[in-house]
Length: 145
Image: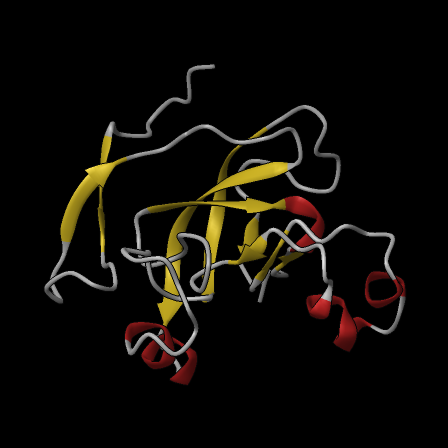
């Protein structure tokens, strides 16, 4: 699949490297229910300092920040709730199972899924890059102001 206007290389800030901007390959491989976002707003919090200090057990290097927002630049036909151009909160969980007690329970427990693939910015690359891949099921559209 060709994605227009996505460069072969992108800028990123990664843990476990000198704290500066690096140029890395842009990965555009994403599954049927994932979105490719162009990062727009990204923040750091105490979790990022814990990842950097090795407290979270993160395999490094890892692209930082689980607190980011972006614009959808590509998606698969299986994604029904988003369109190219939508503004999206990237959030933390990635690939919850959807059928365990935590996933079926209250919203505040869903990120405790024991079968989760990971958390963006903690176990998976995230928003401190020009582009990021996120799962549509765990994202929220940001309404127009």
